[in-house]
Length: 254
Image (tube, rainbow, N blue to C red; front, side, top):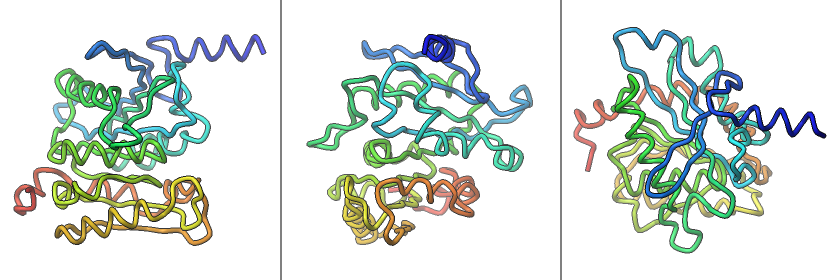
């Protein structure tokens, strides 16, 4: 047990690398946000790289700065750092950790919580400090993190090139604001914790607003639909095919 505790403390130490993810913390608006950052190879080259933001589920809430890239959330964070993806589409991967006692969104209003707003501040900071392509910032997440995905694109629709929420939900009233955002949502039809109705109603609202979101629902699958979603063939390629620049050129930005 002592060994496990020591290893966890080392994993959370600033600068400690876990599977290529560096440990850091960011202070803004009076809040301290632990986060992990994966850097693509050859960032010294004269080019800019995409950024994928991964929002973990409620099981990873805490301050050890390792849960959000391990356990149930490992596949969602590591999909983007896999050799296949990095060879084809090298990118930065940001995995913040929501502190205990907080959620990414207000559970009643579904407005961004304090730490989700801090994530937006962090994205801006990373854009200033790193060679990040501002036209290719993507956001994805599972369960509580998927509610965060919907909230981010609803409040900052022009900041993200694509969004992938897995078993979450948003505000139907904001559908018109996100109609131009490329969205691929996933849900398990038998989810007892976050009913599939949450995704269905958002997809239907975005379609009514003129958008063309994608939606994949897995029959008989319960809450952990992310196990299927993160293994979905073509998901990463679909994400990286989008950029804000091409969306604007097509005249699709509201």
